[in-house]
Amino acid sequence: MKKILLAMSLITGIAASQAALADDALKAALAGAQRTPANVARDGARHPYETLSFFGIKPTMTVVELSPGGGWYTEVLAPYLRDNGKLIAALPDPATSKGAERFKQKLDATPAVYGKVQMGVFEPPAKLSYAAKGSADMVLTFRNIHNWMGNGEPAMKALFQNVYDTLKPGGVFGVVEHRLPASKTQDEKASTGYVHESYVIKLAESVGFKLAAKSEINANPKDTADHENGVWALPPTYANKDKDKAKYEAIGESDRMTLKFVKS
Image (tube, rainbow, N blue to C red; front, top):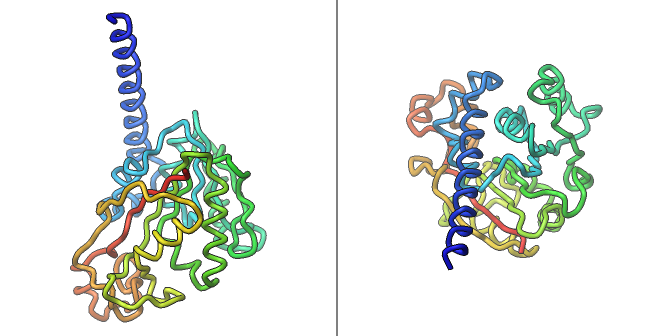
């Protein structure tokens, strides 16, 4: 019995040590010089440490980032996963997309940080060939679902099914999205940038995901989600320019859902 207890204690100790190392690696990536100062300035609104920790990220994982945009989260994920994991950036073909071309230029400019990042083609609804089936431990998307909803319900279900198929059993799909209050009517194309949390959950569950947890890490109760020009009226975009800018500054960035789904 003593040997069993000792073995269990050792296993627990190793697990705790590995968790501590992973946590240190995440903090180091967030504190790294590779991060753009303007991006660092938004940490208080985007909570990257808390968000990634909630999703359960580990430096040994294969992680897909869907539609990374300008690379806000890529600046953290790339160095974090560089040595022992893998980061796949899923975005349009740089040959046909200026945004993707700029993203690739960002990676190419600093190979010591981004040289191991892989790029896969992700152009919903037609092209979803960013990673092999059953190859990823985690798929992440930050404030992108509203951009895809204009493709229609069948296309959205196909996209979520593709994510499900890309993950290994037990894999995690982490979602952050602008949240529309349940009392407000959902625009099918999400033209305001806001989405019902219940819609995302129902869509994910329809393809086989289980909702493992919700978090209010990225909540903002000041956001009423009824602004002229939608979510883009808020910082950092300020779509209305100087009109009511002080009001939008006081609100801050959008209220966001943070959902963790698991492939059963």
